[in-house]
Length: 236
Image (cartoon, rainbow, N blue to C red; front, side, top):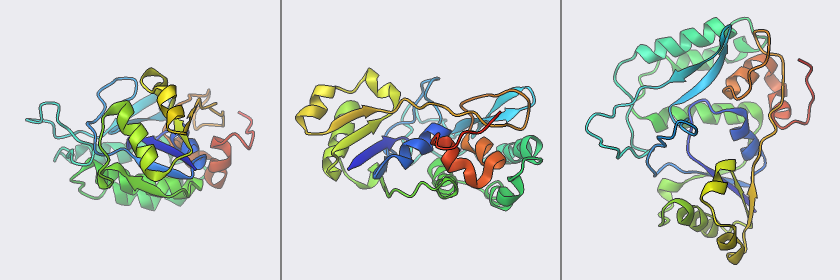
């Protein structure tokens, strides 16, 4: 059984869903502190395509008094609703002319009309919709409900053991902290997911990789799952 594990993300990029599509089971790592690394911090932000290249859509978090203790399944969204109008306005301005924007407009309009209390509630709701849209049907567990001990590499290995994984499909940054010998000793194959990013026609001239999957979905609609897996070549 191929297992993947990743922290929840806001409007995740294509590679996130490609890993789900290649997994038999996915574990949402939601009981750890939010990642503060500038390279991998996507729990509350992601990129969308604009006429000038790209921009961040960032969900503001309530961090006052938390002193670094911001568990992903507990962190709260700022009570300032301005971010919701900004995100919805940006999506409309950048994608309203995209071929499939209208098919998803009602969902996203509903998302940004709601008052979200916790980040996990927002990411769970939107990611489930996006998973369905690209055909990622593998079952999902939440680490916060599993009661598995450990930290960092030990936690990842223990989660894999708990669910009976025969292979662990890790993100590329796993090379920085995972020990292949430990996985081999546990009878689990360690595989790194080096995502070959596809190209496709975007709303504006030129191509910007590593955008949120909504960039692909609004442009390519029902073909998005095949395109992000590289099984359909799309001219740019």
